[in-house]
Length: 181
Image (cartoon, rainbow, N blue to C red; front, side, top):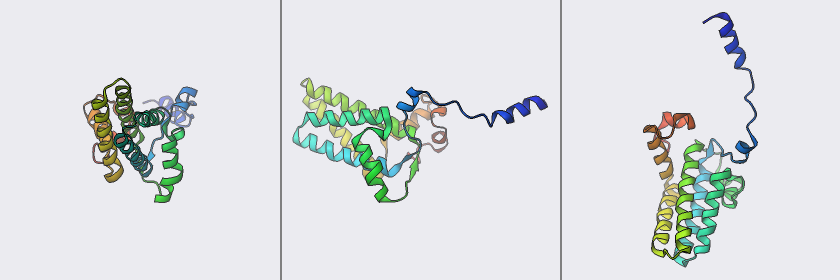
C-alpha cells in the first residue's frame, strides 16, 4: 500500500459520518436496548393480552396491536407501554442491562404480525384463530417477561446463521448467536 493510500485511509477515519436522513431518524430503533425495559414491556403485554382473552375484548387486541406497530416503527419513543417501561419502571430496577436492538425490533415485528392478524380475524368473525394467536402471544411475551427468553431473538439468530438476515444488520449478534437472545 502506498504512502498516499495509507494517509488517505487514516484521514478518512476522522471524517464524521454523514447525518442520518429524516426518515431514518423518525423510524429509528435504539441499539442497544435496555433488557429490563424490554422485559417489563413484555410483562405489560402479557397482562393486557390476558385481560383481552379472558374478557373476550377485541378492542383491547386492537390497542395491543397498535402498541406493537408503534414500537416496531418508532422504537420506544411513541408507544405508551414502552414509554412507561423505559422512562418509569426500568429505572426502578437499576442500571440498564444492555442487549442488541435489532433482534428486539425483529421480535416487535413478530408481535405486530401476530396481534394485527388476531385483531383482523376477530373483527371478521374468526374468533377461534384470533384468540389462539393471542394465546400464542401471551406465551411468547411471558417467556420474555418472566425468564428473559426472547423467541423473536432466537428466530433472528437462526435467520442470521442461515444468511437470511445479513450480519451487517447486527454485527454484535453475528458473534453471539443464541446465547444472548
